[in-house]
Amino acid sequence: MSFSTLGLSQPLLQAIEDQGYSKPTDIQEKAIPVVLQGKDLMAAAATGTGKTASFVLPLLELFTSELQYQVRAKRIRALILVPTRELALQVQGNIELYAKHTPITSLAMLGGLDMDAQKEQLIEGVDILVATPGRLLDMLHRRALHLDELEVLVLDEADRMLDMGFIADINKIIERCPAERQNLFFSATLSDEVRDLVKTSIFHAVELSLSADTSSKSSIEQWLITVDKDTKSTLLSHLIKHNDWQQGLIFVRTKHGVAKLANQLQKRGIEAEAIHSDKSQAVRSQMLADFKAGDIQFLVATDIASRGIDIDDLARVINYDLPNDANDYIHRIGRTGRAGNSGEAVSLVSRDDFKSLCAIESRLGHIITRNDLEDFKPRKEVPISILDYVPKNQRSEIIKPQNETQKSKTQNKKTAVNRNQNSTKAAEKSNISASKKPANSLWGSKKTIWDK
Ligand SMILES: Nc1ncnc2c1ncn2[C@@H]1O[C@H](COP(=O)(O)OP(=O)(O)OP(=O)(O)O)[C@@H](O)[C@H]1O
Ligand SMILES: [Mg+2]
Image (cartoon, rainbow, N blue to C red; front, side, top):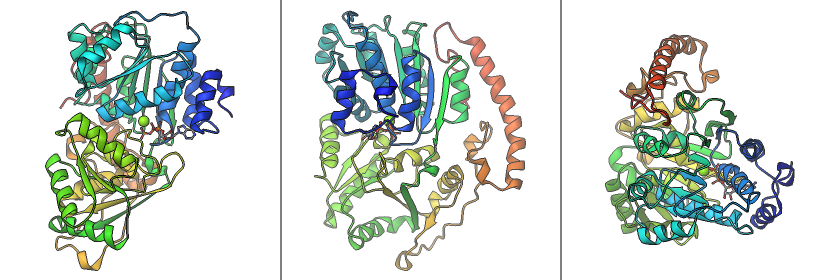
């Protein structure tokens, strides 16, 4: 299969060739025709498999085939919502690359950038807007932008956009969109809960699910090392020096922890910088650019860098601590092993990470290899995980367990009972939400299945 057989025209084929892509990835092959047909789509495919081009290329094709269309001032044709500023800039950068032989215009709208310049660009006319929800709502309230002529709405990292942190903003944005529009949802982790939720208001969406789990992504070699919390930083410095690691993206749960670790590494002569949301956007952008260019060896980051960020051939991801949410682990490690490359994901696990470890290994459906070091043997031992672990706060909400094929029959029997009870409850809740929702909201009622 080639890009030309997917129905893309010459200006786009030229841009694809300029990028050096020889053939479409699986998700591109399946998603592009669906988007070109104007259908709603919910698509899950592993990290680094080219989901961005799966929605950007057909959007550009649809818009270039109607060149007589003139976008009005303060109106846009497509809106792509993303969870972080870095991802907004990256996706818009991708659009520019793919659209370079077409007249289609795009803009990234995010906090931390000059508002006046963005307003002016909107007046001149923008076809595709990539935005974070906060800044977008601000612009809508200032009447600098109207969504009444919107044709396509894309939620990239859709499960993140629909979780508790964003859902209220997303609903406010959707209320301002025309009811008649094309909806596209993309993520590496689209759980059954998210799919069910989407289906309560978007009917007839085509569903694609391509090796959605990183558990099936063999290009990333995962291993962990158990250690006491207070010796993690010494262990990390040892690993970097002893193994002569030249590069790594290091995730830490809190901003404070990020700053502290970067400091400790620097003091030990390791070139490291800290990136988190308290830094100015200019500094954040510069840091990421320097890291991508190889000018920073180790970037210590919060989860602002865990979703969607594409770093060419990143050698390894290091989890200095484990994220609470198993999906975040999948996104974090997915920063390596992209576009057919291989990579390594290393986690430093102490006793207080144990619950997260159980959730992650249950999600993956297998135990992660332990490469413990005698010199760093923890005083507080980390037990071996129980693979059907469900975090306490999710116990009543789970509809289907992940990776059930890999669990033992007994475990399956146990969870199946819960699943049946819970899916009935969730279905009831979804129906209530659907029946209460206002005319044009994705989930009009604030009662979602995430409500506790
Ligand atoms: N057809 C292709 N052939 C080769 N490389 C490609 C192709 N399509 C995209 N890529 C490259 O693959 C990399 C990953 O793409 P992209 O960021 O879209 O992945 P993703 O699936 O959105 O990942 P994530 O889930 O982490 O957001 C990018 O560097 C992109 O340039
Ligand atoms: Mg992506």
